[in-house]
Length: 258
Image (tube, rainbow, N blue to C red; front, top):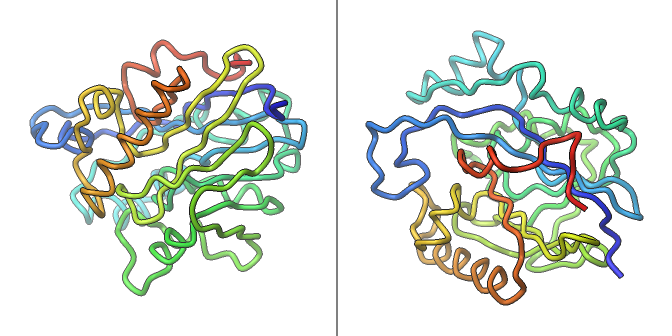
């Protein structure tokens, strides 16, 4: 029996990006506002977050905004107060201490920014991704300040891993060296896939098109195909983190899937 009872979709802001960031060869003239999504799971073993969104301080502090966005030629994301993690949890009736686990799909800043607000959780990350995040010259998408608190309780794994019945981590490298996804089972919805940045949009899966950037193109395509196999074999519902169309039809917290 699955331990997962509910799934909440948290809209954590928007990124303003060229289409080519999400669709390989998509062109830089088509600038898109893409959602930043995170997911809260209610389980019999406590609340679990899959990703934590963006730290809004990066956007609001002029020095950090310059360092992390303007210096790389990037537009800063849009994070309104209602997009922040803790207020969204509060609308569901959940305090930070109620969250016992965080699963990070990978170490980029639009997935790691809420860790500072959750000091007592177990943080699940692939060993290869931990190495990627803490290497001497990190990728500009990694904000080390999100990750370098010595109090973080890292639970580093290597490959697929079952956290509890109905919640499994899947190794899906390619976007980054240690990217991971999650397969869950809900009581009424049934199987579902939280795919992080394996593909930004459903088009990445439907057409098997790579996103704009990958640490390893071969691994990235293999991960897209792995997700597609599970999706089709199990009839799994897809939750794609950055799809600007999908977010319009999804139930957003405090509504949920069960």
